[in-house]
Image 1 (spheres, protein in one colour):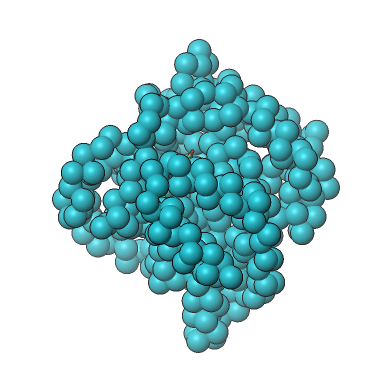
Image 2: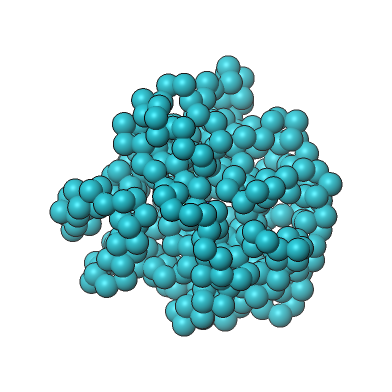
Length: 375
Ligand SMILES: Cc1cc2nc3c(=O)[nH]c(=O)nc-3n(C[C@H](O)[C@H](O)[C@H](O)COP(=O)(O)O)c2cc1C
């Protein structure tokens, strides 16, 4: 059904401007009578950050920026959905055009710049849906796992206060909060990954998490990083994340790099963050590099260029307990989620394993010993 829907709509969506196509896809998810995906194979279940994920595949941040279609995405079979990035106040983002498909490469470049309807609109929508799993309102497993990705307003006088305020406001309705300091499209945002700033940010963010626990129960806080960090930067980031006791990390956001191997060299000159297949090797290397530094202190979410079951497996073997995708859905449609689940389940069956946790990080040491991927 989903495959058929995609086959029918793909030519139309690809004929449109990418941002109009995205808007239409969200609209279709809001109105289409969607079939509920079959119950997941129990072997695909993952326990992480105190939450029980029915399967490890999440919708990455950026698709449902304003919390409009979380339930539709869960219905289609995602194990979790990350809303956002949400900023405290509404803001328009950068001027259009700001989203580009690199069809020949299976890539996407975006410089959206946190276009957001703001916290009030997203809160209203989230409060109206059933309480998500792990949230204070006594969420049930049926409600599904919905995380909130938060960011600072472009013109904010105090960016750390933006993150803290969003954690306080969203903790009661979110399964987890992702602190996004890795978008390349808000000037200066990535500098928050520098040691002194990050330590200050995380100290205050974790304080907010602890206050929220008392009022609304536990809300795990994850840190989303850029794939363009140097390994020395990564040493600092992981060290601070561990000492401040974050609950997990999401590796990684889009890259500013432009692989010389890209076929769409003209489009590749567009400013912004590159995602999709061209990001796969770099982001997978960063997952492995992060995994060996984290030493099991918390789980990782691996994201970047996953477009097949094999790629999902590689990301998990590099160190990801959970995975997310976005760009590949533009090319392959939502049926990809089912394909990946089927591949993962059959790999477990073939290798006589009961759960994916047995292979998380199995290849991290090998991957970190390889030559640095050319991007
Ligand atoms: C159009 C677009 C918008 C995005 N917006 C956000 C965002 O608002 N916040 C965020 O943390 N990541 C955002 N991302 C990054 C994705 O969440 C993900 O980290 C990245 O695209 C790599 O995954 P992929 O190769 O599967 O797309 C966006 C990506 C795309 C393509």
